[in-house]
Amino acid sequence: MRITFFGPPGSGKGTQAERISEYYGLEHISTGMLLREEIRSGSKLGVRIRKIVESGHLVSDDIVNREVIDRIERIEDYLLDGYPRNLSQAKRLDRFLEETGKPLSGAVFIQVPVEEVLKRLTGRLVCACADGTGFSSEYREGDICRICGKPFVRRSDDSSEVVRNRLDHYHNLTMHLEEYYRGRLLSVDGVGTVEQVFQRIMRALRPWA
Ligand code: AP5
Ligand code: MG
Image (cartoon, rainbow, N blue to C red; front, top):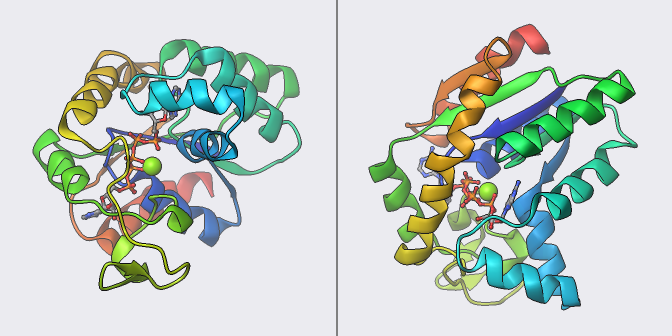
């Protein structure tokens, strides 16, 4: 199975992608995580990417297309999380997949209203070792991470001004994917407990599994 998850920031893409990819044995490829890795590496490119991510804007298509295509070239089954994020990325991905004869099974759209997204993101505390993914409380012991011993902090792009930019890009660019993927799109209600949303996605995915 080759699928992509898209939805607003904070809709639970990372949380659900981790569980679904583990269940189906898919490689979980998150462009947000790949970009944060590049930032942590301290490379010149990482310094450029940091400025863009921390202002809530989108990193250039060339950079993210290359990151993703380099990885999926060598694998059969994967779950893309947060990619594609605009029409040009979606078309580039499809062109590449047509060449390889391994098209995407489809796209999962996780729908969560803005008020809920704002509540989740402004309340989120993460530790770098969990990369801001998953239920942070699993790793927390007081304000310290049980795995690496470092303190929990806000993700650097979760301030209200930056979240506003991220939401603007979502509404102006990413939302068009709903139309683009028509006919190979599963829309899932992302409000509820993590387990409830997981079960909904599992049910929806059955035809592609
Ligand atoms: P990225 O890291 O992908 O961030 P995002 O899409 O803005 O979304 P988040 O990761 O914040 O949220 P999520 O939907 O994964 O939800 P999560 O599971 O974490 O991208 C970061 C940046 O990188 C972008 O802004 C851009 O600059 C750049 N970038 C990335 N991809 C790019 C691309 N393709 N092109 C160009 N630039 C790109 O959950 C959020 C919180 O809610 C957590 O605290 C979680 O514990 C909690 N939660 C999850 N599910 C539930 C639930 N059911 N109920 C209650 N709380 C929940
Ligand atoms: Mg994420």
